[in-house]
Image (cartoon, rainbow over all chains, first blue to last red; front, side):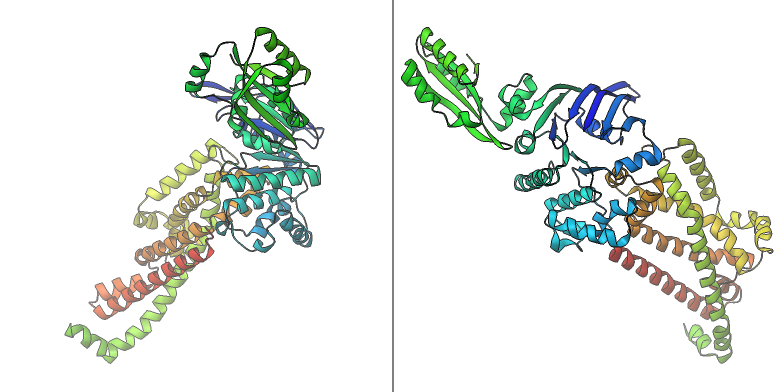
Length: 338
Length: 229
């Protein structure tokens, strides 16, 4: 669906050149909800703007729906952009137009006849739950409602891709939840490919099927969210995961645990059905290991479950190694902390 | 004070007042309305061009921006009274005469258009770059961005600008009297100042005050009504 090949972007500034994107390669499959997460300044905003050529890449290619975006300009680029919806952190609605007028805007640009535009508005309002707001102005709406208008506007021309630039970063947690729910619904209902730029792992966790982690202008990690959450490679990915599945132990506790003889601290990450297996009682009963639960959480990861447990195991070296074998055989991802 | 009351009760004075004022009022309105319209016809494209050719906007072009900006600055720095005289040959070429109400419109427009360009520029700069980016992402052409985004989104400040321009032009029409432009300002000088007709002076000033108040009130009200912020 979207292929990004060797994409680089260098900004020339009076102080020298600044590499915002360094040889990015991504493949975003059709129907995916593809999250790109990074800290501010990592280059993620530049990356999403390079997809629809709001920002011209310095080198490399962006291919959307078989169309090489980097080769397009003028009218051909404008025509292709009508097939790529975009929503923004600050909504960017036209303040002088009503909700209906804002939704009509991209259709006017695309040259739709008036009656078709009116029909399309009536179709879209219920999709975003704003049936009663057609004649309100953006200033009369809440942040969440404004973003719903933004979404309706982005969907108006039936695009095949929706680009979301920090679309929930200006919203409170409850509103974020409802907007993510709506995006997920749209993804499933219309099989629309969604690309999401964010600095919040919560967003990735809730709706993404795939994730790429961008750090200092480079993609440091990418894959289906299950595998990235289960087995993160980069430090930055681990930090992001810890932000939604905290597993850090207090220093006081660590100091106290250090006193224990024959003890080992491990974290166990698990997915889906493994969450319902009685691994702890197995460890205790079968291997004579004492298990002390230090920390644990289980939450939804888009449509499956993901959990992380921090355990203290006490026992002889032999028992401990048997316990590890057992956990491995259960396909659980174990990491020894100390 | 008694002198003034005497003037207003003198039938002969009253007769000339009623004869002179309506015609002068008509001339003033004619000059102001036509000049304002023409100043906007010239000023809006210049203001739009200044904005869209600036760095980071939809058609960045430093040369166009710089040259146009300089021309505007030059015209804005020439005192109106000098412009009035300097433009006489140009006015004659354009309207066939350099004297009269129609002739006065030429210097009024030449002086107001660059001012309008700057007012339009500052109004359009208030439109958030995010909204322009959104329009670009939908595939809007530069022309569509100008008439569907920039101008409508800046409606309120633009209307306030029209009020400011109109009031400025009203003030300048008084000076246009110097080239035989006529109008209320001319009456105030010719009768009120030169011929000690204090009654004429009072009435013309009063009418000017009312017109200015009215224009500002309409501008402010419309701007508030059309603002959906």
